[in-house]
Image (tube, rainbow, N blue to C red; front, side, top):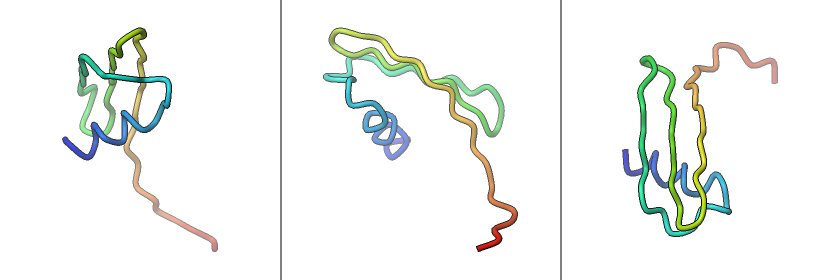
Length: 56
């Protein structure tokens, strides 16, 4: 969870001084994240996926 929080904080540079972080599990592979900063609130929806084919 610590690595996940680091990624969330680095995803949007406008988030400064995070005061609260809420992570909601929607399913085994999707999460809704609400990050409260000093001046703003941001919401993200993450869906985890597995690469099954690559033509490179």
